[in-house]
Amino acid sequence: MTLLLASSWGDMDPYFGKWREMLVRQPGGIEVRLYPDELGDVADITAALVWDPPPGLLAGLPNLKLIQSLGMGVDHIFRHDDLPAGVPVARLVDPDLVTRMSEYCVHSVLHYHRDADRYDRDQAAKRWNPVSYPAASTRRVGIMGVGAIGADTAGKLKQLGFDVAGWSRTPKDLPGVVGFHGGEGFAGFMQRSEFVVCLLPLTAETEGILDAGAFDLMPFGGGIINAARGGHVVDADLIAALDSGKLGFAKLDVFREEPLPKDHPFWSHPKIRITPHNAGITNPVTAAAEVAENYRRAMRGEPPSNIVDPARGY
Ligand code: NDP
Ligand code: OXD
Image 1 (tube, rainbow, N blue to C red):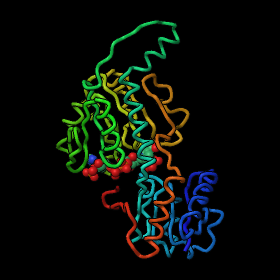
Image 2 (image 1 turned 30 degrees about the vertical axis):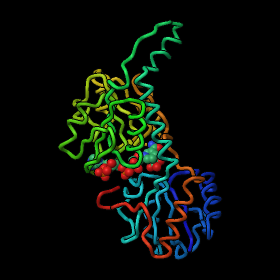
Image 3 (image 1 turned 180 degrees about the vertical axis):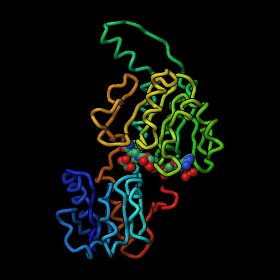
Image 4 (image 1 turned 60 degrees about the vertical axis):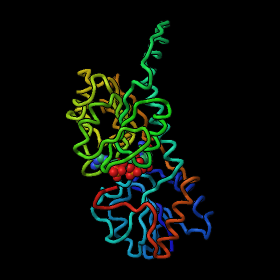
């Protein structure tokens, strides 16, 4: 019984090395191999811990009992249509990662709420220019996706006094958060949301959801914070909405192509702020116990926790 750590990204060895260190320390110990150098006999591999796995790798592991995502999202796994049938795919739900993500979103909302860019400009010009700003209670923040991360973010923004709404696939009842759901709730949600924070999984239904039609619904001068996936945004529509003034800002952590290509117009757009997909990076120190528990369950023939539904894509 062996767990394979695999990714199609280059230079994962230092990170994977940390994972190995944490996994072998778990109760019962886990034998870990790193792809590609330590693959060895594929028949030994019973679980795979993956981030954007190399195409065809998982289908070629005959005794696989668990596909465990290294992150909370699983789109990097489902993007391949050659997954082995009947092997459960589980995602991480790590409280440390949830906290890091909601911290990023709250920081971004506060940045625009307090018009932080203005003071950077004023300082550069040695300009003393105190300007009043609206109370948080008058700011309408909309959270797209109120799952593990979205619900935590909504709660924290609520605590800071913001007027918060959430949009989900099924109805939700979060204290003090105005709930919208489904296609029928989308327009009302976007229309009220001056700040839209995207925390949706990337699925067939959510791909390209932040497009010209969605931006048109938003209040003039509002903005988006996307910490979910680049595929949620239609890049050209975002640039057009920012250039026309319809949107006032965009804070982006995730992109259709990562690393963001050097010639991409997002880099130099004055209304866009970029972070390099590090709103939340899975920390093996906090997440290894969850992975180890799922591994033990799968090896005992029990269903792992946080299994995702392949048909739904999250
Ligand atoms: P969850 O699965 O816990 O929650 C997803 C939410 O999205 C749920 O509220 C769900 O609705 C809603 N949703 C899904 N599909 C639709 C739809 N078609 N229409 C409306 N609502 C929908 O996800 P997490 O909170 O754990 O993570 C969200 C995403 O954040 C991840 O998938 C990943 O892409 C991204 N992420 C990014 C990171 C980064 O560093 N930038 C780090 C970690 C995660 P319902 O509740 O009804 O099911
Ligand atoms: C994740 C991510 O899905 O880091 O966890 O993007």
